[in-house]
Structure formats: structure tokens, C-alpha cells
Image 1 (cartoon, rainbow, N blue to C red):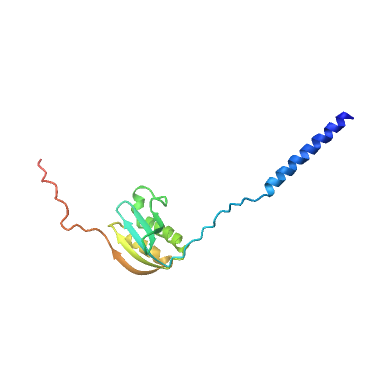
Image 2 (image 1 turned 90 degrees about the vertical axis):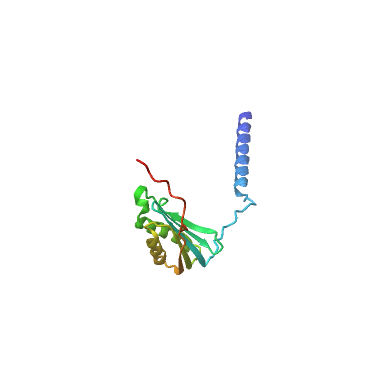
Length: 154
């Protein structure tokens, strides 16, 4: 008979452990993660920096805080393909789709640099549905520049 009592005690201990685990699972944490709300920004500035090696598109709000950006290198283009107009178009599409999530509708565009992706990036932004208010060329131009190197003697 003593052996049967021990078995009953073991069963009751197992039942208590199962109840404790169930209690732990049913308790909810008092800490709840705050849901991030995306801001609705209607107007923005698109900065297109187009060099001979790459094209970078940054879209910012009117205060200058960058909302989305993309570059030809980020989109998987390597080497000489980064400087192509198609790579600039893909990068502009990517940056524009991220900015559209914020509810952006109108852009003022600032273009900088001598690269081949300047106009293509603009067309891609326009094709995404942005209303472009103005286009400004901010390419730095030297006012007589630095002193040239001395004449080469052979």
C-alpha cells in the first residue's frame, strides 16, 4: 500500500507543476511596445547627386531631415554600371517609393554634379507620381579655381 501512496503523491506534484506553467503563460506583460506611426509629410526636397561613378538620391522634408535615400551602388550595381542612367533610374524609383509611404506628394529638386544620371533620375521621380515644383542646379563651379600644376619638363 505504501508504494501506491507514493505514486499518488508524484501525480499530484506533476499536476501542480503543470498548473504553475499554465499560470505563467496566461500572465501578460505590463510593458507594451509603442506602435510607430509614420508621419504624413506632403512637401519635400529631392537631392540628386550625380557623379561620374555613382548617383545618390536623397529625399528630405522641408526642414532638411532625410526621409529616404538610395544610390546606384545600394541597388546592386557595381563598377562602371553604377554611373549609367538606368542605375540612376532604379535608385530614384527606390527612394521615391519609400517617400510615398510617408504621403509625400510635391517635390523641389536640387541636382548636383556632372554625371549621366541627372535627367533620368528626374524623370523617374516624375513617373512615380510626384509633382515637381522646381528644379535647381547646385553644381559647385570654381571662380578661377586652384592654382594649376607647374609646366612639365621632359
